[in-house]
Image 1 (spheres, rainbow, N blue to C red):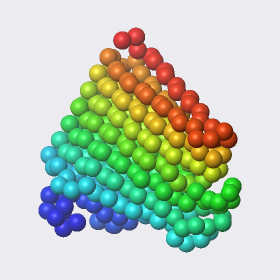
Image 2: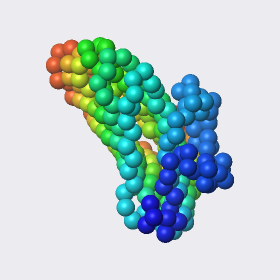
Image 3: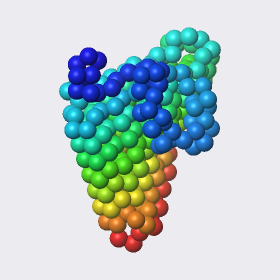
Length: 273
């Protein structure tokens, strides 16, 4: 952290950020995922249990990958971390998070919120390796209900989501991009592996607002046992999104006769270009 601080990079817990950088927290908290966005975002806003805060100053390329690890150790508890990542103009950062939990015979809730703000000519790569305890034969495990959203605020900004989903009993997770800046780019790469009685409902939303915006969605689902794997995605082209482009590819693999794979792609176009 000392080496990062020399370049003006802030990488600390959410609690530390509130105490040491209150103005930055006040400026960005809730701007991408407001408290009334959905039930679990409201719950997180009410009982947030710390989290991570990252700020990359103008013109700074982060010299190392930043990483965090979340683990639910205690029984009969939930986890509600809050992550805010800001990339100022002409900056770059790669961020990796991992998560796991011990074996328990009861359900536990994980309802995190992640907000990413990318300014002009900045780029963020956000990767997640999710290995929460999936539960036994239809009993126990982590209920993984997460809200992740990035705002490509500036022109030529770029956001890339990469995720590997292998754990949790039930997952509802849709990392999304709001492409507000002209020539901004959103990417989503996902592999979801389910087995036993796991249920994974994952996907993304790409909201094109700026001109000449571009998005890419690559999703792979692998189902085994009696599990159910669902891709649910939205591509929305707003009236101002002249010359917007999207590429989506969704593939599923079924291993065994009792599993399922489902795909729900939504495309909404309000621009005739």
